[in-house]
Length: 520
Ligand SMILES: [Zn+2]
Image 1: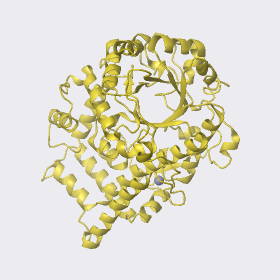
Image 2: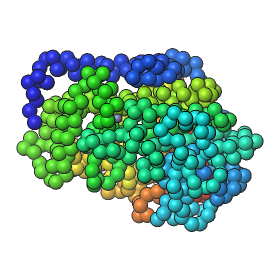
Image 3: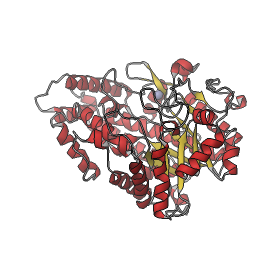
Image 4: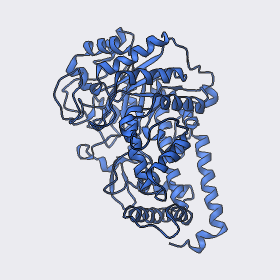
């Protein structure tokens, strides 16, 4: 579709540049108190303030955290679980999942995957919700009030576990993620994202005030009513541009997630000088473009040129993507401020999804240096084992859209060059080989350099994250090598991921062996 006269004029170019600088300004001011603006972000720390935070990189007192679901404590007993974690893996910090509707953090082993060498030897079903008691006074104004997970009775993953962890000197950080089940959450539509075609989505909108209030209500509740050391949030999603281009690790199929175009986002865009109708048109055009590429049509000028032309026709596509990830950052800032208000000593951090080590598009958006303004720690997901099959899938996805002019092998080589990955496997071998421990080291060093040491980097260590049965499976030496790589690259700690219920103890033991090797 040709660019309209008005939008093609110098005036619109100036408008576009203004939009871009508005975002840069927003990024620069995210760390300040903007309580009266539409980008409301409570007072948060700044890099300058945090410069005096010394992030230890010595071999002593390494932070060894583990993500764990309430189900494991119920199945195995709290004391036995804690004994196992301390003795087998030298864990000194718990990250119990307090809120999720997803299997990545809650429940036992994923059905179809071999059951590990501990816990109840049966698969379960999860409902999801809050695995800690809800204090109703914290949800009086929230449209979502009733979301206690029913499957574990009255078990409270904070109130029941924290005292026992304390007596052992273990820290506790509550962990929650954006994994919702709209069917099970009354009023979900009031906090939901809305796609470019007007359909309600499966996640929330970052700019919806009710969605923000729901999140801050939970954070206040947890940090006010429990003796927590901190919290970590997983916002495992990306903006509409990357999703439309199928730049992800899932299999391609079904409709593309092109969010958010709800009234709150449209209003925020308007305030930033972005033409929402042009953005909507642009995303529909991009969606059609991807559909045509997937059906095999090769444009006369080649795939990449035709994509670039579309982006030039609709600069609002990029502006909307920028709006999306800056809105995600604004929520980070909001939660950071909320947590600090409830408990100034709480350490607040973010899990950054695995794609950050695979997609240059997503990586460009996730600037750790910028995130450091409202973080105490960052956990980049450096999952090397499942990274093999996941990266191979990512490469095939983007080859089928953005990089159709190249072969999948060439696209892989290009990405290795983008990221500086050396001596990793060929596309054919990658799903069975996984990434090396050098990948963990590189990503750790990169993250530390980006935050200039101002906040702690705790790389996520892959312990039995599910893969296909004929793909790379975690081995004990893999865990040891990955933990060693993270520590030797300067990380003051690690987060054993994704959840204890899917980890083999024989693999988990690699963490202790790594600590022993560095004398910590
Ligand atoms: Zn929205």
